Length: 324
Image (cartoon, rainbow, N blue to C red; front, top):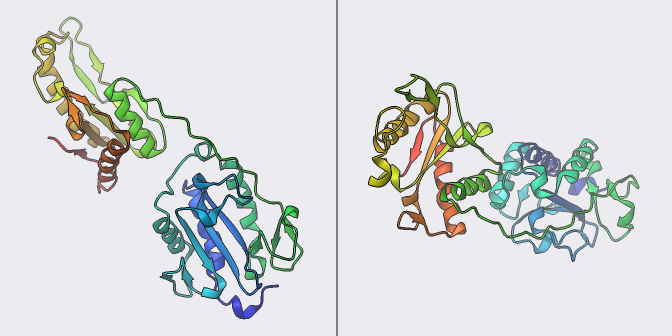
């Protein structure tokens, strides 16, 4: 067993609890590798993002990852070399430190990371770690790691090794031709989930038609129910006159340009009233030419992300937009 004098800190247990918490919160790409140093004097662990998995290494090459968090029992309550924790630190605070140390770790669906089997395996492993003497060891000089991880140094209690992982080769993203769909895809990449396109609501209606008096439901560009979020993309015609199109008369008896302004205003008024954030992304938020986005997905994703981040900080549902 690991000697008591080097195991006074409860931080190792809090680390395992923090990883379990982050998995539950959707940070599905988080993995760990625990083991003993060569002298057997200290237990250590490294946390890394499965997106950096290296197929050339048995354990995925976490010590060569660009981002990781490390801990050794020899450091007592110092986490990741710089963070000094109190003895009674909570697993929530440890989870926050992990996110601070690994900015690339984002909420994703299990299927997106390919780490779903590991998350389920980890839940079973964590249920077996109740005391410091249960800390798992994935590698050490004295045993064959093909038999699985050892629960407690020298205990001879083995736990099945984690599911194998094969790093996926990212296929190039094919972006849609229409700028509206391009922007919504960037939003989906940032949020980690797809939207519902052209969603309608019973409370968001157009004006009555001249012939029948019926009111058509007004669709929104993209709706994320789990985020209480609607994204509208405004092309050039939302801010500048386009005579050829704007002069057309609609079923309500109004020219299209004036009706568009009314409907845009109606959405900004009604959507927040129903508990949903509205983010309006304008073509002028990006580099553009003749009303079309000059596409640079990397920088465009930052533009989209900044607007979505602003909206997430709203104390109550509202409208987030760069241009009025």
